[in-house]
Amino acid sequence: MKVLVTGGAGFIGSTVVRRLLAGGQDVQVLDNLETGKLRNLPADVLCIKADVRDEAAVRAACVGCELVIHLAAMVSVSLSTVEPERCFDINVSGTRNVLAAARGAGCRRVVLASSAAVYGDEPTLPKREDMPAMPLSPYAYAKWQNEIDAAYFQRFCGLETVCLRFFNVFGPRQDPASPYSGVISIAARRLLSQQPFTVFGDGLQTRDFVFVEDVAAALLAAAQSPQAVGSIINVGRGERVTLLQLVQELSDVIGVQPALQFADPRAGDVRHSLSDVTRLRTQLGIHSQVDLKTGLATTIDWMRSEPDAA
Ligand SMILES: NC(=O)c1ccc[n+]([C@@H]2O[C@H](COP(=O)([O-])OP(=O)(O)OC[C@H]3O[C@@H](n4cnc5c(N)ncnc54)[C@H](O)[C@@H]3O)[C@@H](O)[C@H]2O)c1
Image (cartoon, rainbow, N blue to C red; front, side, top):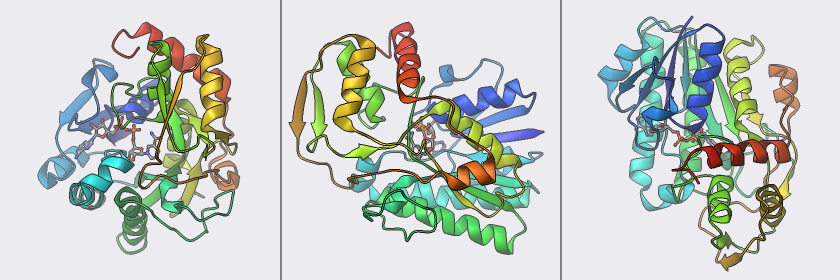
């Protein structure tokens, strides 16, 4: 099967690409390398350097593909509050391009990366997929719009779609040098270099952290599962930890005492996050395999082996 992975040079994308290759699939990537890197990819993978807003490039990349895994996006909530129009352009218009191109090329299915950010600050926990969306940022609005657009293509255009709402993903190849990266890679980098780590808010906000290999497994299951067609499915571990607990776990794995600084909460950040994993288990057959401590240890091993990362 030929598969196109948009955003395949990024953190989650490069993990999915490896899994697809290991399963014997023919994989190509479309990525503008804004946050992704060519060195994240195995050398023999074709990476088309193009923007998802470039209709002709996306159309050409979809030709002959049975499956598209669409991960390319402006990934930062905080950047989206500063540049909302660019966020909508990339995340909404770009995603519509991908859906239209996949349909035009006769692809069977598109699996899209949505986000737990769609739930916003609705206080009920755990977050179930049938709860109302309450987005707090342009990024979250754009992801919500992606789900609506995917439903449209599913219902009216004969294209199978599945949207996965990722919770907080972590693991190797998450860029710790980016201020917009996931909290684990940023905190780990600070702790490894014995610098203070800034906690936005009181540190008692909670997150459901899921290891990137479990997310990649969910993406591949979503590409195959007949029950998943037309669904929105949470991808988390179904467990939550406070930010302060996370920093302590990380410090234990690294073997340092954490030095913390506190700053005001950031615009668009939600207070608590926890996924209901019923659909993940029943529709995709996925039970997360990697617990937080094991995932942190693997991530730290990778950072230590990568001079740029640590
Ligand atoms: N990491 C998380 O915790 C998390 C949580 C929820 C949702 N997501 C979603 O998962 C997807 C992958 O995120 P990631 O964490 O791997 O981030 P990432 O930044 O590593 O990957 C995104 C990739 O998209 C590429 N890209 C960005 N803009 C593009 C454009 N206009 N055209 C083509 N390529 C473009 C980047 O170069 C990068 O390779 C994104 O859609 C993100 O919103 C991630």
